Amino acid sequence: MHRYAHPVFSCKEALAWERRQLIGGEPAEWAAMQRAGRGVAQAILRDSAESGGLRPAARLLILAGKGHNGGDALLAARALLAACPQGTATVLAVFGERAFRPLAARAWRELLEAAPGRLEIVSARTLRERLAAEEEWDLCLDGILGLQFRLPLPADLANLLAALNEHRSFGLRVALDLPTGVGEENAPVAFRADFTYATGIVKEPVLRAVSAPWVGRLRYLDLGFFDAAEPALVHQHVLTSGVLDPLRDLRPAGCDKRTFGHLLVVAGSRTMPGAALMAVLSALRSGAGLVTAVVPETFIPAFAARAPEAMWLPAAETPDGAIALENLTALRPHLGRATAVLIGPGLGQERETQALVQGILSLAECPVVLDADALRPQVFDTLGVRENRPVVITPHLGEFLRLRGSGPKRAAVVEPAVSASPGGEGFSPAMPVPPGGAGFTPAMPSVENAELIDFAMERNVLAVLKGPLSRLTDGHAVWHSLAGGPVLARGGSGDLLAGLIAGRLATGGGDSPLVRVAQGLLWHGLAADHLARHQGATSAVATDLLTHLAPALNEP
Image (cartoon, rainbow, N blue to C red; front, side, top):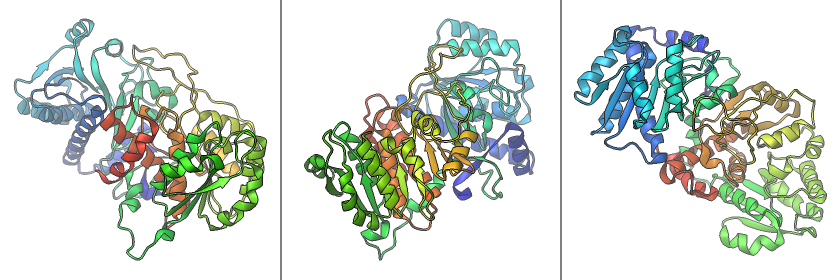
């Protein structure tokens, strides 16, 4: 798995690692700064497309510190001005131009030379006055403090951050590496970003739930620090798009549909028919060779017309329209042919149906994905351990808390977290709006990594906890998926994820079940990003994601 993920470090560990990677001194540091500046600019241009993109005459506000973080921001400003030919930049050297360290000073000179007549240099006092006057900028880029931040935050800087956070006339707020005020210990007020771009290494503070109101949506910009390095022995990682490389390879010439596995989906009820259909539609695009769906018999005509590529098995129904227990005998031969089984989307909570789930689990020898209504304590109590049969669970927060109640009791950990919900619906506001200005959204409870790891180990499952930053664990470590965003905070996105993960499991091949689950998780998030950039997040529906799976996989 280390080929497909990069480690998460503390700030101290990140500094030490960067020093080891940049042993060439200033030339190596300058090359890394240039990669960071270009990478941040490209990411801003890409992510800003979700809200219409930067205008050719965009107005930029650049906040530059004295060190590498400031230099990265100035280099990013240069690249952004090149991409916005009529654009201008207002620059605040927060600690003064004379305080720039050598490489930041070099970046400053290059910006001055590259954009003559398009730069305006302001003092902190002038900027605060203009903020109070509600002057508009398309972008505010925070490059003040990075890894070097230590408490206490100077009072004048804290006041500036508060004024920036209160300002309502920024199109986009971006932090470089870490928002100023976020570190091993957070300041009472920090820069509030819409996006934070972690450059080179993802630092642990930006993944803490308490930092989420300042971090916004987190992105990782790979600068090559791990290209030739031995994998670090850490318990947190971020998934990279390299995990999808096997899906981008040519398929073998001598293959047929059986080469890529057979997924069996057991889902749906009269009250939630759409969940089953969405899971099947997603599975059909996962790369699996065959998909067979077991749904209540009354759904078959409509579902077969909507997805003729699947094989639809009619299931006898309970009086209330759920899948009846009597179907278990008929399912035996299909379970014997399946290479993976997905159980749960829209299945309902009837006792008879839950008994069916338990019966299927007693028979299935292949990998199993449990989602939605299959995530019940009574199911886990009879799950057992079967060699060579990985079990994957895909709960959102509420489902995880329900499942945790079926095992050893642990103290609940409740921390603020961001409101976007990549990977699934089902969250509800639980925390008050944090301080720091307009634009915050209600935060929600979170679960510590250690608690998630312990649960997966005790239950012998691979767990995908859907949330603002969805997490995958095998009971030993955690992998974060940084893709996705608020476009996924709608009903149905979790059903699509379940189908995608189950389909990847069904394909088999040389990759481990952990890798195949990670493929489904990251692919789902990248498709959501692609959807949001091309369609926006407001008017999308969950099934729009399906048409963005292919371009998310194949476009750079």
